[in-house]
Amino acid sequence: MTAPATVAIPFFPADTFETERDTLLETLHAVGTGDDQRFILGTHTARLEQELRDLLGARDVVACSSGTAALTLVLAAMGVGPGDEVVVPAFGCAPLAATVVNLGARPVFADIDPVRLTADPSAAEALITPRTKALMPAHLFSTMADLPAFRDLADRHGLRLIEDSALAQGGTLLGRPAGRWGDAGVYSFVQVKTFGMPGEGGVVVTDDPELARRVRMLRNHGQDGAHRFVHHVVGYNSRFDEVMAAFQIRRLSGLAGRLARRAEIAGYYSSRFASLAPHGVLAPPAGGDGRCDYVYTVLADHRDALTAHLAAHDVGCHVYYPRTLPGQPAFASYAPPRARWPHAASAARRNLSLPLYPQLTDAQVEHVADTVCAFARTSERTP
Image 1 (cartoon, rainbow, N blue to C red):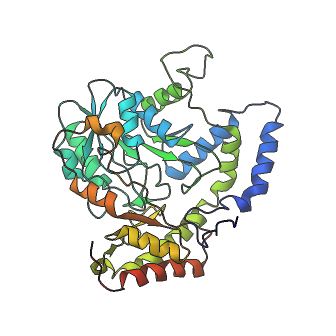
Image 2: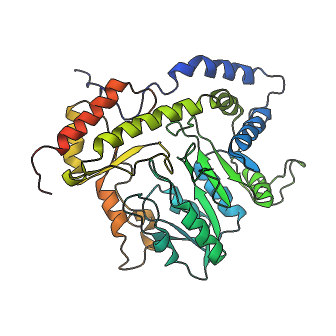
Image 3: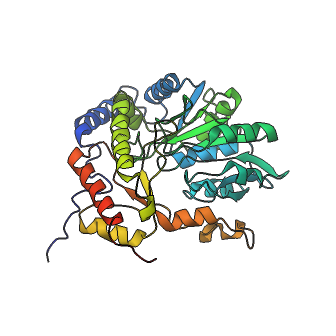
């Protein structure tokens, strides 16, 4: 049997940590043979938290087991539970709704802005009721949500603001880093994220000392760190791995360079795709402010045809969210009868992500752009 041909330009790089293989092995050996034999929540985790605090200008950063865990810890620390509602985007990743449901609260789905693809503040405001406890907008693909509007909305209605920045580390809006607009923000370090690592992990970012204290307890079975086996609250096992913490510390200095390369590639795509909207391919908003160059996603009127065209020219691509969140079987019971989310439905039908990672060569980036442009500028198609 002939082995299937590999895609010349894969969507997910096969060599994400190839250049850091020696660093990872050295880190594993150093932690594994260390005198203290501490493999979770040790000095490396504390140092990573401190370095991220310094980088972000935040009062506290709490490392935990994943971005999803970070959302759960924040919601729980805020006291979200049965009878409460949390406004979330109708389009995005499942944890936006699942973390709310798992705490016994109700996700309320807001439609999205048709260009940003993030939650529309006006749509969110229309959904606020006396049961609303928090707003949880999320940055998506390569665009930050309208956090100034959400901050104002939360303040006017006396609500908590949770900023899901799981994929937006390195993004800034009006000079403020992603994760720093809300009462708390979260990042994810799963391998494909901008500060990804070969494992699971995440952090909570906040300036609220009491919220940080509760998150720290909740991540370690409700213990406060001062008295082991004294459980002040019912918590979770959401502790951070020392090998991964030490590895991330060593990689942190290179983050700015990797982000700059992502931004360079995204900027090139945007320059090439700027004129394609009349041809059925809409590029994300261009410009540096409010960008978080994690995934470069276009909206294609003929997504299946474009996917096939890219594959025929050895370019990998990916559809992240082919359904809206209220359209998922897991969350259908939380969708009001006859409710509609037209912009979210359009995004689910049309979104297509292109390769965007620092290892791409200029020639590969040009080939991706050439392939998309050639498709868009062929003869007219019918839906």
